[in-house]
Length: 43
Image (cartoon, rainbow, N blue to C red; front, side):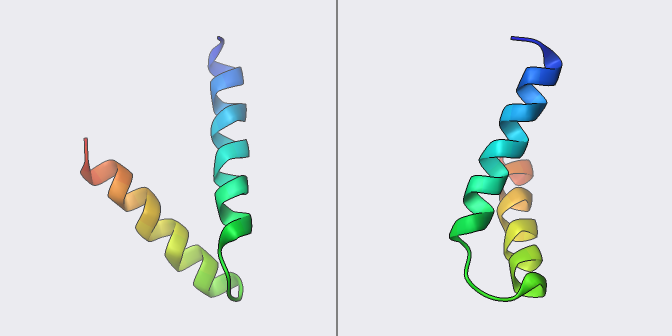
């Protein structure tokens, strides 16, 4: 799988997750930031 395909998959997965989040744009950004921070903290 190419780098571009991996990035496309990443974006699709984040978009799928974003669609499950309730609230306005600001709340969604906050939740997504918390989610991705949790992923980085595991590294």
